[in-house]
Length: 398
Image (cartoon, rainbow, N blue to C red):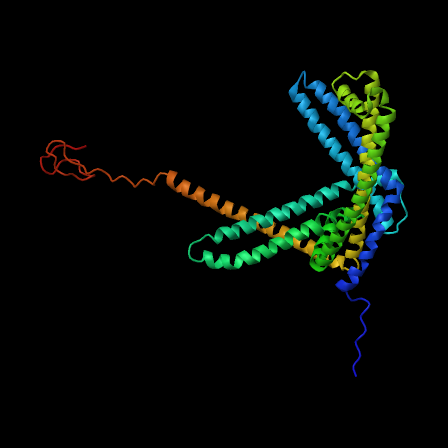
C-alpha cells in the first residue's frame, strides 16, 4: 500500500488552492467604510471640477481676445486636471494598499505626498507596456510581410496564422487582465518600475489564468455593487423630485413648473429665485454623482490590491527581476557593440574614401624630359654634344 507524498511547504500553490482565495474578494466591500480613501477620492473629484470650472471660465473669456491663448490655457487645464486626478486616485490607492497589506495606516497628507513621488512610476510602466506591445506588432507585421512572398508565403502563413492568433490573444489578455490592472497596485505597494515589470512578467508567466478568473469575479462584484447603488440613488432621487415638485415647486406650477424653472434659468429668465434653486439642484446632482461613483471605484481598487497580493504570493520575484536586469544589460551591451562596430565601419569607409579621393586628385609624376638631339643649324646634320664644328659642312657650332 502506497501513501501520497506530503506536499512541500515551499511548493507553488495549485490553481484550486488559489481560486479558493476568491472569497477574499468580498473583503473589497470593506473599502466603502474606509473614510480616508473615500474622502480622498471625493476631494480629488471636487478639485478636478473646480479646476475645470475656474480655468474653463477663464479660457472662455480669453477666447474673445485671443484664440491661441485660450487654446493654450485649455491644454494647460486638461493637463492639470489629469495630473490632479492621477495623484488623487493614487493617494487613495496607497491608503487601500496599506489596509490590504495590513500596514500602519497613513494619513491623507502622507498618502498624498507618497503619491506625488510615485505617480510617475505608473506612467512609466504603462508607457513601457505600450512600447513593448507596439514592438510586438511591428515584428508581427514584418513576419506577415514575409508571408506575402510568392512560393513560400502560403506555407509560412499556414503556420503563422494559428501561432500568431494564439500569441496575440495571450498578449492581449495579459495586458487587459494583468499588466494594466495590476500595475497600479504594484506601485501603491512601493514597487519601482523594474520591480513592477518583473512582478507583472512573473504573474503573466505563472498565474495568468488565476488573475483572469479573479478579475472576472471582481467585475461581477462591481456590477452587483453598481446595480445596488444605482437602485438606491435612482429610487431616492425620483421620490425626492416628486416631493420637491409638490412642496417647493407648488408655487411654480408643480413638476412642470420645476422643470420650467430649470429651463428658464438656463435661458436667463428664471430670476434670482430660479438661479438659487438651479445651483442647489446642480450641487445636489454633483453630490449624488460622487456618492454613486466613489463606492464602486473603492471596491474595484481594493479588489485589485487583493488580487495583486494573492498573485505574487510565493513568487520568486528576485530571480525574475535579476533576469530582466540581465536582459536589459545584454541589450545595452549589444547596442554598444553595434554602435562601436558602426563607428569602426564608418571610420574605415571614411579612410577608404579619402584614399580614393587622394589617388584621383594627385597629378601623376612627370617623366624626365629627354634631351633634344643637336643638329647643325646650317645643314641639319646631327651633331654631338661636344662637337665644336659640324662634321658635314664644317660650320662652327660653338
